[in-house]
Image (tube, rainbow, N blue to C red):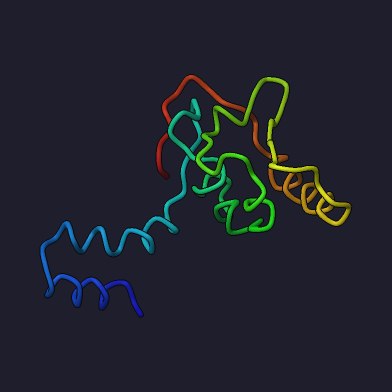
Length: 118
């Protein structure tokens, strides 16, 4: 259903905040974030890499992560990525991690700026 039509139907049922709350899942999928210091952007759940949220691109790996609410600052260090999974990976999952690292390859690191939306 188109977002505008859905908004009109929801708004007829209640106030503006209810409309925003009900439409937020659809809207949030279209927000792209610019990583600054990484303290506000969720590594798995928010679109910061320009493609789509990593939990959508890699649902199999997302289901294995120890903390789905990790921020960029918690996963990135000057030594590289620190992605922790709940268990040891099977052979067929190693290829998926390689694909994930390929997607992450363009990340240049954190900065002193605040995180923002684009």
